[in-house]
Amino acid sequence: MAAMNIFYPTWCMHFQQSVRLSLKVWYNLVMKVKIKLFASLRKFGPDEQVVELPENTTIEDVVASLNMPKIALLRIVNGEHRPAKYMLQDGDELALFPPIAGG
Image 1 (cartoon, rainbow, N blue to C red):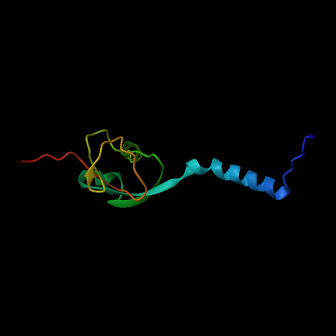
Image 2 (image 1 turned 180 degrees about the vertical axis):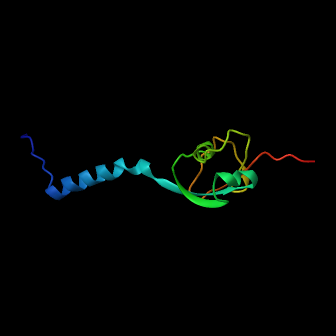
Image 3 (image 1 turned 60 degrees about the vertical axis):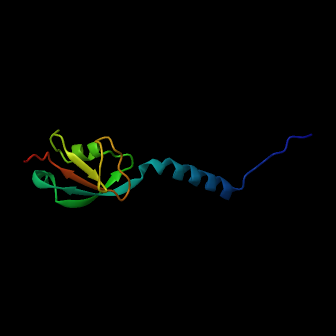
């Protein structure tokens, strides 16, 4: 049997190229996270702000971006205590508190 020449119409080739291009940018997604700073941490930014962050951003990344000292912080995400390595999600609310002592 003779080999068949398969060809793609021009529009099909452009479609394939645009799909390939759109797949290359999927990793640039951003998410919005509300950050609240309390007590002495307010000197590192506004009391409350909504920021756009890349996906897979951790609480530790946010703390570093705010130039906060490396101290033990109370990290609350959506009302629950979370570790520094916790990856934030779109729409999360992150509240940061300095160490609290009292009696």
